[in-house]
Length: 303
Image (cartoon, rainbow, N blue to C red; front, side, top):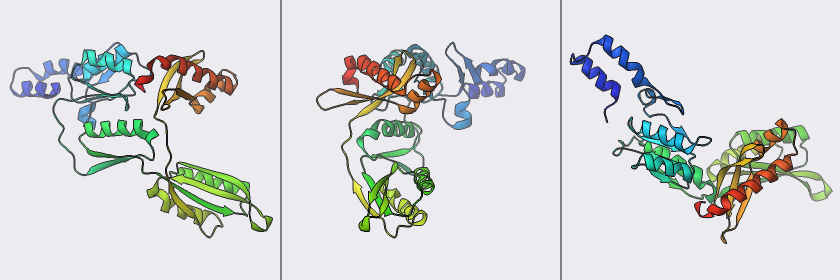
């Protein structure tokens, strides 16, 4: 599909309109004022890809209108879209495709020209699948050759020390987490000869293990690090935005094999609400989790 501004330039070159007349038309080809938002129609020219619609927090009808408007400009990507939003978008733009697990909606006229190289999206477990598939959908729509590698496991590194102060322990945790560790923690232990010590544990992706090991050897007094690759079973889960007495909060929803559901409110969001409204954190967490289970229990098959 030819960009509207390119067609305008061709009309100027052909003498069909004057440059002065084109100036009057040009603003409408760069920005589009809609009731829901202002669309930047030149984003594809500057970034080689149109604006992306972030559906979370937007009304389904608003997302559908934005999506339909962008569908005339090139490939369209909408992220964090639930089933209700997807239905509204697909009704207005029939050629669109919805990935329920990734929560993405894409539309494309023809196939993009593949770029050089290849992108590999790697997950440490099945719980990462929604975000991994969102990445794959995004990369492929942008013309990248992309593969998905599932559940490569998690490397666990351990070492014992008996001379680390509290300040040094805190600094060590910050170092490995900033370096990309999935998690890190300290466990008080009693070592041989009844010495009090700490067990340092770092979890990371297998390809990060060597770098994490070097941090442990350099930043602590240990002379050796034990490491192994672990696998764990994880429940499929997604983040659901739910209405609570204190506003909309994100809650992780997981489904067991028997169809029953588990909910866990996002800690940081709940903590922010608790502080702002002077509530007990536990009250906000439990309220959000109960609200989520009540809302989605009727739609468990959409997980």
